[in-house]
Each structure stands twice: as structure tokens, then as C-alpha cells.
Image (cartoon, helix red, strand yellow):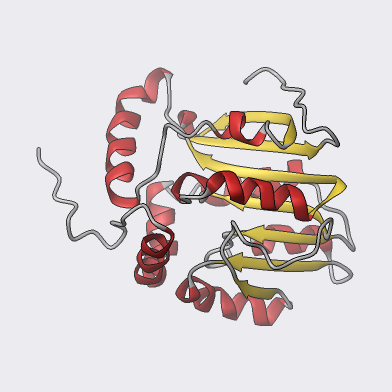
Length: 231
């Protein structure tokens, strides 16, 4: 079977401008496509990661590549009305989709490249990054920026696409090939290895048959990682 992906709404060149344009185009259908791909289990992944990230009431939290705001309900439940939640995304159309959620819940939205965050050093108690580092051409810089704006005792939580093993390996081969072509997801990027350059990895968990990777890290003064075993 031949998959013609040339006209895909998510097909993008691997440049910052290309990523921005593709997500601008995909924004109206993003939530639907996300739920279909994950069989409506994506809420569970996001909820579980926020639980592990464990922001406290009153914390200041940054949602990098916040997209349409799918993480907002889980983060707001943690920080409560005393906390502050900021959502950052490169795509103005994705932020437009998030605007209704943001306005009703008091979330601040900022259009910004993850590799050039317009915040002071050590601003945030917690940072969440979901499903974007492997499509970000400058992911190394984005990780550096996250480390810069995170407080010394802060935590970072990351969700990413992952190549599965085990029973879903063959299904995963098909899905990863499709997503690699459509969304230019770089499955060769080792998120754990890259994050370990700036954070001590506290947890590395595979979910959804290994198709999703959830990582939680803590900031270290010398950036030398203490890595737990994979689940």
C-alpha cells in the first residue's frame, strides 16, 4: 500500500518557519487528530505526567509548545487560583484555539519560539513540554532555554513520541513512518539523553505500548545526570 502524504495538513519542512506554518494549518483539526491517533487516551498521558511533575498551589508553571491548551485543565487543577500558568507556542493559530480555554481560566498566552523564551532566568517552578521536541529543529537550544528559566529546585516534565518494542512493534513501525513523513518527527532524537545534558532524570516511563515516552527531570547545578533504569 502506498501512502500519499504530499497533501497532508501536517506535512512540513524541518525548519522553524515550516513547523510554524504546518501547525497554523493544522490547528483547527489538531485536537481531533490527537484524540484519534491516541484513541482518546492522550488525556491519561497528560494527567499522569502532571501528577508526576506535581506542581503545587501557588506555583508558576510554564507549558512550552502548549498548542491548543490540552494540558491546561490538569495543570490548573494543581496550581489552583493562587498559581500562575503561562502557555507558550510558536503557532499563532494554535494559540487562537487555546484562547477560549485560557481566557476562561486566567491562563496567560505568549507567542514564542521554544528556543528563544522571553523570560528571566529562574522564573518557573515547573515546566511541561508535550509532543514537540522531536519536531523542533533547534531542540537542543529549547532544552537549554527550559533549564535557564527553571528555578533551581524546579522540575520539568516531557511527553514525546517513541519507537515501541514488544507486541506493538510492527504497528509502531507503520505509525512512526507515517508520523515521520507527515509531521517530520525525528525518532532518532533520544529525549532522555538530550534532557540528561541539563537535568537529572527522575523518571523515564513508556506508555501506550511504548509509543509514548514520559520523562520527569530535576535541575542540577552542574548538569550531571543521575539516571534511573527504564521501566
